[in-house]
Image (cartoon, rainbow, N blue to C red; front, side, top):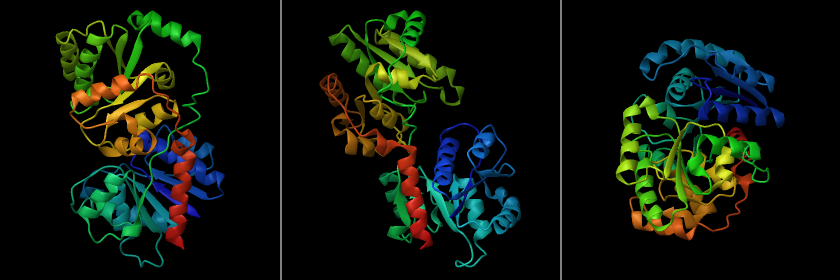
Length: 365
């Protein structure tokens, strides 16, 4: 099977990493992997693991991307792939228009990956017009059906994004040097039970709810310390200042630490008592929850979105109703000593890639 992955960018991030890991699994299983995208830092890694790379101009999130339709059609005619797998609205739209004039029997199968809800519009039609559609959660799949009732039931496949379980290995010990370095930088963490809140810092990220929860918990126990990890959404320093001000108003000045964006998430999961996911917007991949569960950490999250679906299957004790601070508090205290042993293999890139390959082969048969 020859598979083309069409990406808007090869900049490091969730999308490019998913595509890279899927490309690696394709090659391992004896399939031909090709990638069409703008030049980027991950190009060398695709080539290193056996994928062919075809450079393509940057495409805009608008109908102006159609100026590249002829170029894409010629590339696909030369490559003759079995599957064109797209990531994002712009690539789905352009691939749909490029292939639309060909007969269904001669053209490759178009399979968009959809990881979020979006309005039903002409530009979004590419996401709804694939021969098959991969949805990153059941919620996304249900909204796709509502957006376009004509979509066949069996053309949508729910496949949860995988994570790197080699990186998030619960059996690997945390180096004492790491702990020493962190505590030297943040001495207020020493001797405390860490409640970890990972994710982009934004008004919809759930950090405000976490601070209110922490204020209640800290009033009952002196050994709880909140740790907020994540990048600022759109570099919004004003919102970070607002959160820091709220922490002071709640008398949490010495009981919460903002670590910013980190590359040592495995160690932070391993040394935290609880992990929280309280974003108000529905998430499309549940990345942090899967990583924490793979590390054996109890996760507390709202019952909506992809995270809610993952916890419903693997750790339902951690589910709470959105906005219910009382239930959030009760679940947190109940799970402080709760053992958690989900099967991390279910979250692996290999598992999600295997399901994706099976879906592609069903579409071709």
